[in-house]
Image (cartoon, rainbow, N blue to C red; front, side, top):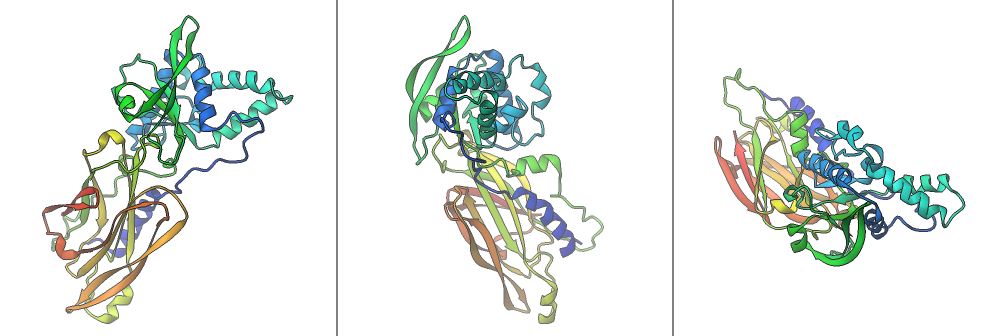
Amino acid sequence: MLSVKLFALAAGLLSAIACNRGAEPVGKEPDGGLMSKRDVARMLSALPLGDGQLYEVYDAVSASSANGYDEEYMMSDLLSSPGTGVGGRGSSATKASSYQKPIRSMIEDYLASHVSSSTKGGAADVQRYLDYLRGSGMQIYWPYSESWDGSTLPLITFDPGNGAESNYAYVITSTDNGYELVDSVFVDETVAMGRPVWVINQNDDSDCVPLESFLGTKSIWDFDDEAEDVDRYNLYIKDFTMLRNYDSWLAGASEFHCWVGAVNGFYATTEEDLKNYQPEITDFVVVVKRSEVGRKKSFRALLVTDFSDQLDKLAFLIVEDDGGTRTNWKCAASVKIKSKTYGFDIDIPYHSSDDVVWRGQLGASYFTKGKSIEGRFGDVKLTFALE
């Protein structure tokens, strides 16, 4: 039988999935500018990019996507480990030496030229700009990168914020000296679906460990109950479907944070037994790319161990991350002893600007042992299984 103590271990591992959301720049931007999202987009479009640099970005965003993150290449990785995606596992860090001239070298050359023309600090000023960019939280976001044909050049734009759905983008073309800026055009999501677009935006999920990445590195979801004489059931979420995108396409994917509060392995027979139990909170993150809207993402996430018929109500919250100040949802889980219901207070943290997708209580009677139950929770569909 899975004890409450064993679940505490699982909950501790699951806590790694929680994150500090909303990357903030480290330090003050050096005098002279050059480091706004617009400036960085303009800088990238002015670099003599070639096939090697395009594949460097493609390798990185593909690795991030494989690790459960969005199609993103953080400036901190670009400057320290070319071609490496967010999450590290399965990234292309080992390919770094294969890039003849990584983008970071081009950025260093660009800054050396532009900074030296406006300051007297020389190399020291260049380093200050690089340090700021490394800690800025900015990244190259490449929506729909999986459909790239391997040769079409990207348009390069930036997220102006405030939920904007369109912007102008810089156009680069091939010349004898590499690729160079030639024009600017209007770009929206329809354009991005039809040809490659690089967006300079702000990373807000690199501190998270998405469920897919966590499952790929350590499995804590399945337990061996074969030695038990009595059937034991655990409650899982088996799949997740986002029915609409929650943010502007320029801002990137939707990050869903899910919390469940319940009392695990509850088999009390008297009120005195209640002191031996306390509610546990399980939380995890699911990152859904814009191209995955309406698609079922399958996995096997453990919510409640040793599910008991005495469990009456579970607290359940899903939010889509939009940052803001930290707040709490004060809620309750409940159990039954001899037809009497006893509640447990729970505080579940989230952020004030988050979109609350669904919150409320799930009755234990909603789940049927040995069966899967599909339900809609706001604009998300979930399949639960009590197995």
